[in-house]
Length: 178
Image (tube, rainbow, N blue to C red; front, side, top):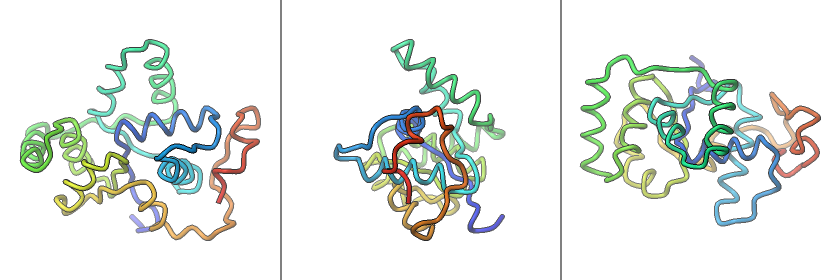
């Protein structure tokens, strides 16, 4: 696989924002605005779709608000492929290893699943997750969307690889374009 075509996974927070962004939200202005913009740009400008792991899928299934859960599930069914874990014992052992450094077991499992799936990158804007586990995997880079976008070296003014359908309100906005 070329370095310019990495396999990139998302944690559940990134998945939720990406889906909100694709559905046509306005330009973000909150404290995570730069992360959210970088995530959406990565979706439209990078050569392949993002990956989601079994743990992220299980977190989607536990969304309590029915409409929000169904919104996520409908996008997951159409935009993402299913990548099941092949070696559950290996994933569990790696997750336990990561838990010595980070108390959130779901985060640890996402990183362990990413290793097992052969992902190159996992995106998260969970500061603690990135801070504690960004240097523990030898095969997966755990980074924020802004760090990933900066490393992509997409030239300013480049055309996106995909664009929102003309009926999507996001197609009329320019904030996500580079």
